[in-house]
Length: 213
Image (tube, rainbow, N blue to C red; front, side, top):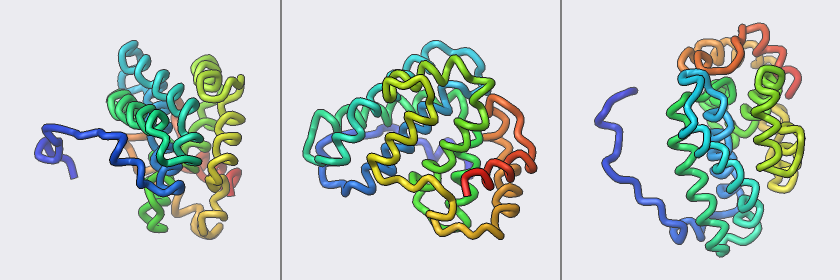
C-alpha cells in the first residue's frame, strides 16, 4: 500500500515516552534503526548522497554508544535520546533505499508473524555478509563507529550477544523446509533488492539463508 495519505505531517519523537519500553522491544527497535542506517548508507537507489550517508554513519555511532545502555536501563534518558536520534537518522537515511536485509526481514516476518525488529535483525546479518566484498571500505567505517572493530559482522555479533538477539533462523522457529519459499518471496521484493549493492538471485539468497540456519 503506497499513498501520500499515509505520510504524517508531524512525527513526535520523545525519549521520555520510550522509558517504559521493555528490554526486548528496546533491542528489536534499536536493531531496526541500526539496519535502516547500515542499509541506507550503502543503498544504490541514490549511489552517492553525502547528506544521507552522514546521517546514517552518525546513526550507527549513536546505536553503538547507547543501545546497550538503553537495553540495560530503560530510565537512562541520555541513552534513550541517542536511540531516538538514531531512529530519526535512519528514517531519513533510507530515503537512499534499503536492501537485502529488509527484503529477508519482510519475508520471514510476514510468514512467521515475527516482530519487524526481530526479523530484520537476522536480515541485517545476511545483508552484511552478502555485501561484504562490494562494500568493504564502507563496512569498515561502520564497524569502527559501531563497535571499534574492523569487521562489521563481528561488531554486530558482539552487539547481538549483549542484547540476546537470535542469530540463527532456527532460533526464530523457522523450519528448514520453508527456506526455499522464503528465498522465493525475498527475491520478489523488487524495491529493496533493486537498491542492494550487489544483485542477488533466488539461489544466492537460499544459500545465504542456509548459512544462517
